[in-house]
Amino acid sequence: RALNTPTSTVFALFSSHYLGKASSIIQENIQKNVSVETVAAEIGITENYLYKIFKSVLKCSPKEYILSARLDYASKMLLMTEYSIKDIAFHMEFSSSNHFSAAFKKHYGLSPKEFRKHAQVPKVNKIEKI
Image (cartoon, rainbow, N blue to C red; front, side, top):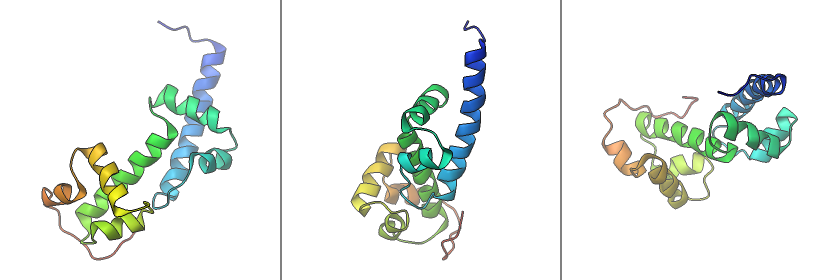
């Protein structure tokens, strides 16, 4: 069992604080391809320190977390709207619908089309914050 040293306690407190800020920034910019550099700069820490916090606490890199959050939002758009996959990819600022589809399939194990096909959720015709 690890000792609860003052250094580890301080790291845990800062980690929680910075993760909360990072998560807020990512959610506020969810429809944009926000960079790790931008998130770190807005918080006021280095990219390396942000990476250390994410790996230590969440067991993933900030870049992986950002992509996962964006794909989660896109999955909600697939379920709740009738927008085309291409339109969702464009709206979420993926470089192409092919890039979006490949990332989505890697993350969910289904293509966006398969994901939508298997869902039975009423859809809306307007893109708003979901």
